[in-house]
Image 1 (spheres, rainbow, N blue to C red):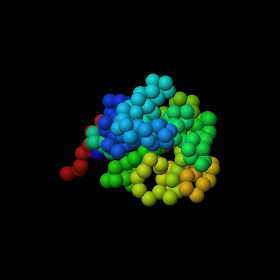
Image 2: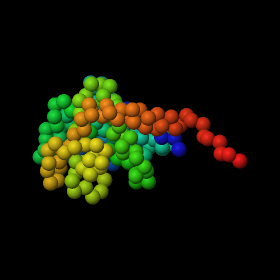
Image 3: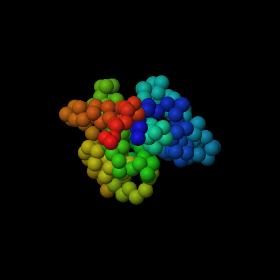
Image 4: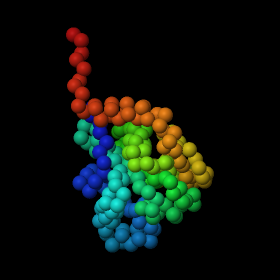
Length: 205
């Protein structure tokens, strides 16, 4: 099974689920978001947001493929690019952090460690760019896939709560502490990205 994580661009944006491709929950403030939905332009607004972040800051997401089928994605950006974040009771995101905005994995591929590999891939990208930490708003009452990531999942992949809240705690992953598991990240990525290229092992007769 070949698995790979590819930077999100306007070219592979159509590989995101329809509801996510047309969702501007994070990308616009609440008033502008409602206006975009009413005008029927959320997909255009999403494209414009991704284009702006790519041009001004750089890579802001990854798309996960398994055997060339898109099965998940993750979005992240500095808090200045995430207007909705200011509406959360535990805002603001720390100025030295990049916000892990949202992510999704297709149900049939959950529970296979892809969530952890996604976070490790984002961490590796941000370490290279000199970022100190990743922060995210978690949903402590998560019941079904939505724009806000489940707090329990964030805790499971290494985040720590920095501002508690009964519904939307803010969590943080210090990237300097990930240096200790950087070799594990490299190994996981080598296995992940090399899975497509490696020849299958021959079975003994």
